[in-house]
Image (cartoon, rainbow, N blue to C red; front, side, top):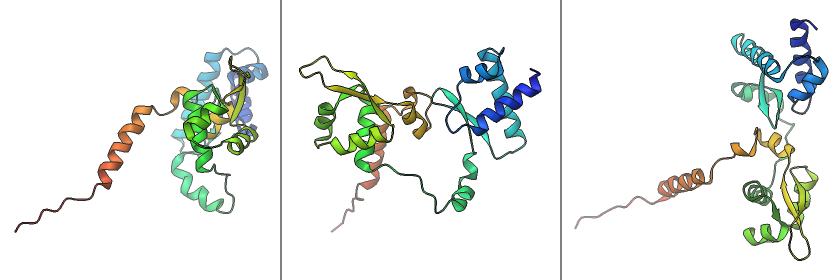
Length: 191
């Protein structure tokens, strides 16, 4: 297959896919390319999009590549899709998901102990949405299920891997900054 045609095939694959396309999937379709060549073509396409100020980019997410829109176009796209809203996660769901993401694998009981509330409904919802899954059983009495995040979780949050999650120290620093902002200004009165 000629290189120009290969570039077109890769571009078309990324364009039509609703999920990230892996290098292996691209290689299966186009044939003789190695992983480095696939990455090079994707990089060249992305450079071309950026240099010509196009409305798409290619990003690596969840072990594959997908087409996205540049962040600076978000205000325009929001106007277009004002009525169409992505399903948002509730605060309890986000809290539970954060615990699982940072401490996986965990049992339901371990999650409930950390959150101090029953998480049955939240867990069911997260499994149904494909953001968490059962990853095995704990070697403990009753052999409870343990849960972990999925590729869908990475896609939902636009992460390449769990290594891209913010570090816990960042949250501590952010909290200290927020608390400092909330401190009332001390007014001293002179008699």
